[in-house]
Each structure stands twice: as structure tokens, then as C-alpha cells.
Length: 418
DNA sequence: TCATGCGCACGTC
DNA sequence: GACGTGCGCATGA
Image (cartoon, rainbow, N blue to C red):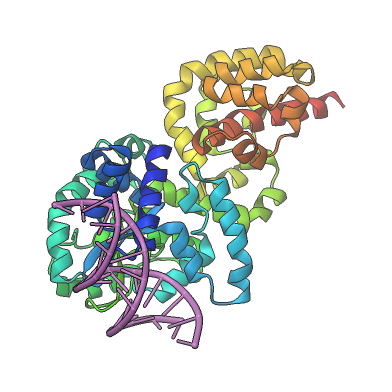
């Protein structure tokens, strides 16, 4: 995750450059950020890469040169076509502002978005010679970044070895090509092939997401950029996504899937009990941490169902849980002693619990919002994710791993008592 | 020298 | 025709 500060700086810079009709390219962005904020170009470049991976910024090839786009604005433009999209724009803008903590780019790029863009923009990454040269130069940076750079590396680690291990990565790089590494002439066909290679129906939201992922720029940057804009061009106003942000971050992809599921497939959540929706990745580790059996015993069918759609939260948590195993153990003991009195938990108790769970920073938010045991029981996912003004990552973990678990445990206990 | 503003051309829808 | 984009030039600090 890039620094929010840098995100603002860079987005402001891009907007500023655009407003004065200057191409928002790396050089200008770095220069302006340095001038305005004194940030080193290298740092700016690095942060920019992160933003690209977060989909907050889109890197595109426009008229033969690299440009950077404010993803949110790109989205809005592409939505102006009909009433349906217009109506959604407001929501997206709201989402965007709500998610201005760095996940902003994810909001706008929902399924419709992706679908639209994907339809509109060839999933290719062909470049002209100009771009190729630029890519060659930036390539070192990007290659390092997307492949083994330490910067997104932290996230990569969370991504579970992202590249190689990612299920979608395989079809992603049939040629293992990268811009500048393969003949330009190869790209169109390669990309088309890649796009078609999706096992899912093109109309399937998941297919779209997976396509994004399949062409994960981290593994196959040349293969597409659904969320970004690409216009198959040969340097005449065509727009091509150079780095597919969504793709560079598998977990972002998962996040997108999650969002989309929340929007369109939310019924799953309503159809299933909260138990059934507990991320198996979490519970898998919970098993090893003295979790109460009842909190783990949900229908295997649903468990399997959930596994298929394992979202970013569970994915991340699965990674983190290994580290937090010991911590979870301690927490579970505390839970055991306190859960019966959950309704009696004070604000301080809740804050202490959250803090002990490894989220001291977020515990403050719980305290600030005066979340006591009763409130905790009433909290919904959105409350945790957005109502506390805490970062999405911790929020997801807190909700999936703790809030939901506590609620489930509490209500199951109540059922038992009946 | 550098940042900024903007006319204009081009491409897309 | 509206809109997005950015080149190229003029202007000001």
C-alpha cells in the first residue's frame, strides 16, 4: 500500500498536469512532486508504481508515450454513456471518496466497469517503438517492481508468493513476455489469445476478474489491462494500458472479486449464515489455535463453496494467521473467558480485545466510536470497513477474524442456551 | 530556466 | 457535437 500522502500528491499532480493540458508522464509527475513536496523522484516513482498496482493510477500508452491516469477519473469518463452508468457515477464517486485511503481505485473498477472497459479496449499491450524504448528504460524499474521489488514486496508476500503461486498466473504469461522484451508484432495476437484463454464465460464477473488476473501485469504485463484503458492504436490517440494495475496485485484482484460479490452477489451473504461465510483460511488456522469447535463447524458444502470464492480478507488472513497463531491462541483464551459476557463488554473491553488481537491502532477507532459489546454484536461488515475510518486491510481482518467470530460465538451460545 | 496556460488538432463516441 | 488528450507555443516568475 502506498503512502496516502504520496497517493494524494501523485493524484493531485496528475490532475494538475492534466488540467494544464500537459502529459502526465513520469518525468513531469516526479518533477512536480519534487517541486511541490520535495520528494525524491525515485521515491515518487516508487510510490507511483505502488499506486499503479493499487489501481489508483493507471499507466497507459497514449499516442506513443507513457501517460498516467487518475483511475477514478478514467472510470467516470467511461461511465458517461447511459443512464445506468450515469446513475452509478455518483455512487462511484462516493465510493471513491470513501475509499480514499488507497483503495479508491478499487471502488470504481467494479464489474460493470471492467466489463465496459474490457469491451471497449482491446486487451492488448502492443506498443510502438517509442513506448518500447520507454518501457525498456522504465522496465528495469517495473520489472523489479512487479517481479521482485521490495516495495510491493510486502504485499507480494501477502499475496502468497503472488506470482508463481497465484492460480491465475499461469495462463497469464504464455510467452513470459514483457513490453520491450517481445516483438511488438507479437503482442496483439498474444493478448487476444490470453484473453480468450479464460476458462470462464466472458460475461461472468468472475471471468472478468480472473481475466484481469490472468493477465496480471506482474506476470504478463503485455497481456492486458481490462481495468485500465487500452485503445489499440499505433500512436494516434490510442490508449493502451501499460501496466495493468489490477493485475499486478493478485490480492487486489481478489478484493475486486470480493467487492463485486458484495455488490452483485451479496445474496450469498444473505443466503448463507455468517458461519458459512467465515473464511476457511481463517478458520483453518483457528483450528490450530484452540478455536471453539462450534465456530468452525459449518457445512462442508458451504465451506467448499466459500473456498472457491475465497476473498481477499480470507486470503490475507490465511497468510497472517500463520504469524498470528500464537497471538490467536492467547486471544482465544481471553475470548473463552469473556464471550459469555460479551453483552457486558465495555468500550474499554472491546478496545482491549481489538488491541490484544494485534490491532492497537484500530482499537483506538473502536474506542473513539464507543463500540461496546452490544455495539460489537450489532456491527455489520460495512460498519467495520467504513464506519470506523480504519484502513481496509486491518478492518477486513478485524471483521472477518474477530467481530464476526464473536458475533457468531455469541449467537450460537444463545441458541445453545435456548 | 522552469512552470503554467491554452489554442488547436486529433481521436473516440 | 461533445469530450478527452496532449503537442506546441506564449507568457510570467
